[in-house]
Length: 118
Image 1 (cartoon, rainbow, N blue to C red):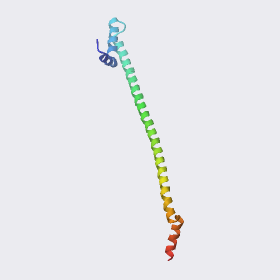
Image 2 (tube, rainbow, N blue to C red; image 1 turned 90 degrees about the horizontal axis):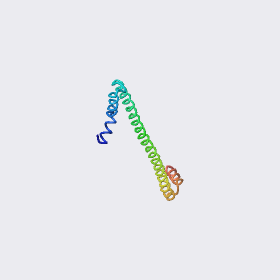
Image 3 (tube, rainbow, N blue to C red; image 1 turned 135 degrees about the vertical axis):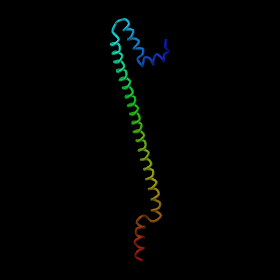
């Protein structure tokens, strides 16, 4: 008897099914041409099933990666908005003390206008 691993490989490749079909030929249930036809049909169906599963798994992986990218993009946007708000706050805080010390933006404008008159 083959081990479980060898049995799985032989089954996957169709060797066990071919042995089963050859047993039917020996018993006279059908001829060898019918056995080959059935084996070929089984192989085509098996290949289609395997390819469908590969495609589904690849699609699932792509969908998961796409979803992860969307989540990361959303997080990045939130971080950028938070940083922009913090920078705006800091900019407002730094402008306010300077304006108060200089006498406000109006004092600067009048100071510049008076200088050219002299």
